[in-house]
Image (tube, rainbow, N blue to C red; front, side, top):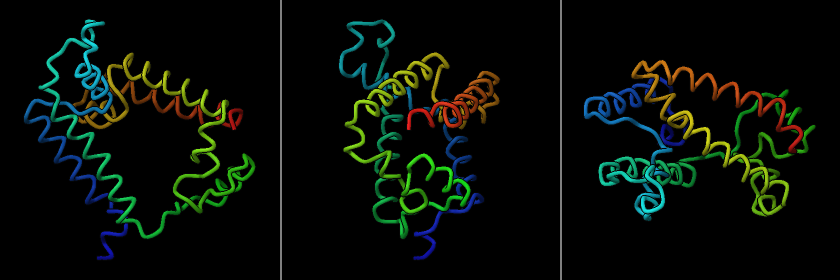
Length: 185
């Protein structure tokens, strides 16, 4: 049972992802999580307010099942299949995070200084999360998909627009991490 408690190596996870993508391609489907929000809004009746939400949501039920499986699978893995919730982080990164007052870096999967419920209720943190969510939602819509859709499905289908989107995601993430995050914290 020790193999269950440790991360699977790349040579197991990679081919499994490739198999799923091959099956999606074979059945004419494309993978992406941000499309689930559109589907959920359509189910709730947003098509009455906007033409963007007028679609046959029943054709996207399979993608909702994928999203539910990712949530449930992540919960099962973190609750039952994780022996140690700490993350191996380089000592220089831990020192840098300590300078930003993140003292639980390397000791917990999610630093409590960032992800505790009381921290979410602080106006500065809540505002940053709301603004970030707005930017991510706008960016996913503007880019025609989210990071999972472009980086996993789009690149495997050799779509040039997905390559541009992934490059933009990385540049945005690096900019956020190195220039904006230290000011937010």
